[in-house]
Image (cartoon, rainbow, N blue to C red; front, side):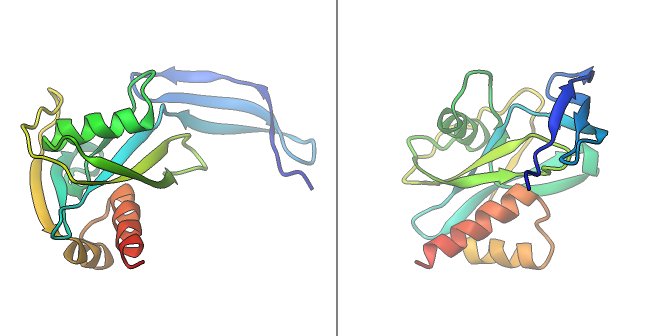
Amino acid sequence: MDFSEKTVKENLIFDGKILHLYKDDILLPNGHPAFREYIRHQGAVCVVPLTEQKDIILVEQYRYPMKSLTLEIPAGKLDPGETPLQGAVRELEEETGLRNADLRFIGELYTSPAILTEVIHMYIATGFTAGEQHPDDDEFVRLVTMPLDKAVQKILDGEIKDAKTQAAVLKTALLLKD
């Protein structure tokens, strides 16, 4: 059986700077009409900066929707026309000041595929040099360096709650075991 749903009509409800909310008329696989509400997002990147000592560099920042500080790996949305690799290089330098990194692609993450088209492209960065941070005007971050195994434990203990950070850090830890 083909489980594909067919778009009958796209209906843009809200057109924001980052998020674009739709309520589309569709046909289900059985031919019955229905609708789907979802948000289109241009995509993002995240990077696990890994030192030779197997420490990772995280950013601590306030996340307004959660009303709390979070500990995350460097990440951000893709700019129009930017490739994921270009975005990873840019975000790593903006948020941490790290440059000239060797970037290894480790996969894609669908953040919430039932309601959101965002795909996060995940990377591990090694061999970088330190430079100066230059975050966006509305971005306030503090760098935190910790051993990879400590970050894994913080994830397991529920102290690191960010999904992209959990996925990329755990994947990095598993890949390093090979």
